[in-house]
Length: 105
Length: 503
Image (cartoon, rainbow over all chains, first blue to last red; front, side, top):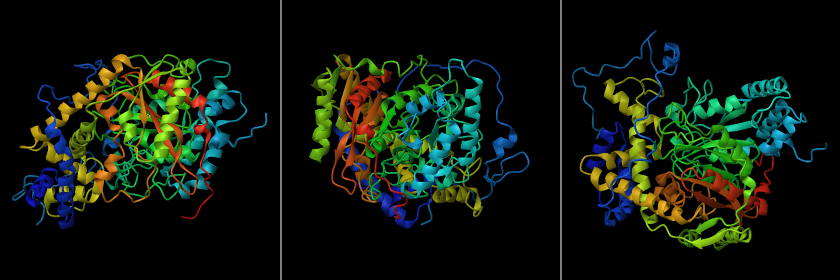
């Protein structure tokens, strides 16, 4: 099982993680080792089985439509790192040159 | 009455008896446990947050409640009982960090449903216990803050990820605790610390307010000194919750009512293949002797195989990591949690926030999960793992057609040394090899102490016996565990933890 540096950087970018060079190399070898163990699944003749996403309990669960209090604005904002009186503050997303980056090389 | 035993050593049911007969007060009991924490916490390092002031206030209110309810029926056995809570369970007004820098400053605005229920029962919350970051780990060494130590041998891990809760109960720093179990995180530390830990059936206990790791596998479960306490705690937290659509509607029985029914005629399947994977002969022998005890008590034992067991470990790590990578996408530094200094625009801040907020194991699992879910690998890894999950579940379904419970070792080894497995994630993952199948299948399981093995300063380390039952089989596994416990004395052993051993 071989994983390339580019694959690691691509996955890190998808996961919105910056990695240091050391981390890229560490995860390259460790992910390869973990996926090597998972190779055993390739030998498992499973096509007859449907994939199981979770333990089914009931389907179409709905809650009774009874209004209940929700969090106050102050409580909702309490843990935010940056707020105005009534809003979360986020940096501009759509300014020029703002694209999801690959990790710095 | 003269009490031979210090208050902090009481079980929940013993303390409940003394409280109801007014021989002690909840304030006295809580004060005694607080003093115990002050004596030994330097050694165990079980707690991330201590809440002595609010705990004493809750104890005072519990005493008032008891006075007001005087002569009335229906007082909860948890009224005035001091408990510890794993720090992945939200407690309003009390910091909840998940063992992560990402949530170092997080104070939840609401209680998890299990906390609401404990508060309604009148329990006293002593504090929040250490955990591997976001419950990802098997040793509690992945906590971003510090490692918890095993009270039986301070150079060894307490297991994980609920290692803080297990160490606290083991070292008498709480009468009982809650943990969470995604692949063994209640049962494995319970085994390593010589206490009782139960993973309920998927959906038996609400996950509302549990910081999500892998939503199709996570369950909150109790850790306690004996099976009766475990049953009491489970009864208090179990049940349907409109805030968690995966909770089951089934009525919650009185889990203590069937404890004494014994195991005569109980059909028990011994997982011989798991036993064969235990390298330490003394540990394997402890489990064999436990099976003999069940036979002597009238259980009918036969050997049973789970043919797809070999697929459980890789399936688990792919599924758990895939779900984790999706669940942890919420940590973006906007609504709560850490945010890196605003530099270089939104995306840069976003990615640096996650770089700085997450530790090594969390990043590893996010990477693995994102890989397994990414285009080109989804069918090869994630879907394949889900098919294997069905095969693992089918093994249990088949076994439970003719057997009531399955028994085997909880873990392949006793508690290992600090930092022994930190550098090799695969070695660490192997310590959950006997516990993660139950999460994949959604069934219930309990670990009870069944002996001691391996040499150490304290003369041996605890071995756990795992008893697995079918979905909603909690009464059966508790009954079997209780019958075993009553026939043995392992659960009464306590570590010779001295005050401040100065490590």
